[in-house]
Image (cartoon, rainbow, N blue to C red; front, side, top):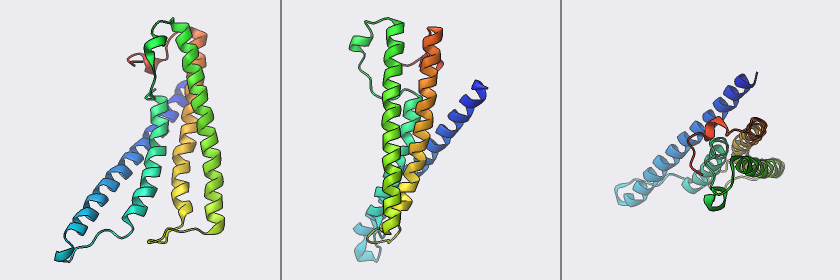
Length: 177
């Protein structure tokens, strides 16, 4: 049961991160095309209309799409000057506290983001140039944020299991803290 759930969470997190990577690559390509278009105005080329709006919306999604991967892979910053002096059990407790705090942050951000999305939808706010509804960008971000909550829950479950077994989580085996 737990192995199946773990594969599902891993697959979800990986899929969302890959989507974030694809959007990031698309933003980079679109930005390059837009810059070239601006540089070659005398030749009749033009920048991509609404490029900054697309970069804003895309970047917001990319950031939220990478949060879950970072949490699950313990990619967040840590300061190991003190924790290296502590025993494994103390480090397991610190990991649990850190993951629980990150989960709390994920839940708060998701809740407020959904609230903001519904507000943008209710008022019909759109972008200035392309006139696409702002709530669309918020909705994309909710995908990453909800995935982050799921990843955060799974990380906390993994920390509790590691504490009960008194051993590091499997994905921590090669991690540098």
